[in-house]
Length: 75
Image 1 (cartoon, helix red, strand yellow):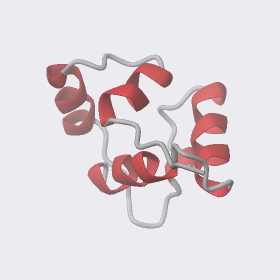
Image 2 (cartoon, rainbow, N blue to C red):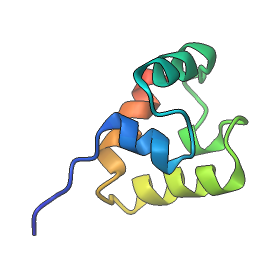
Image 3 (cartoon, rainbow, N blue to C red):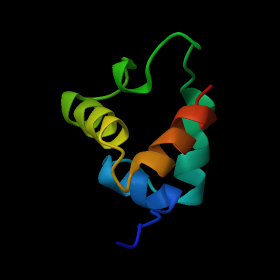
């Protein structure tokens, strides 16, 4: 089975966020997470967004790599 690598912008689209280069930069610049807070538990996610991030990462779905990239970018 071939794995799918989703681009960062596609994750932002999936989350219903501005997926433009500028939108991604602005989101990352204005949202930071402390080291001890799980990505999906951040207060700025809707319930649906948090669930998508949690499920995608825990199930090691084809979204897991780009979710991890988002996690690192927000630290």
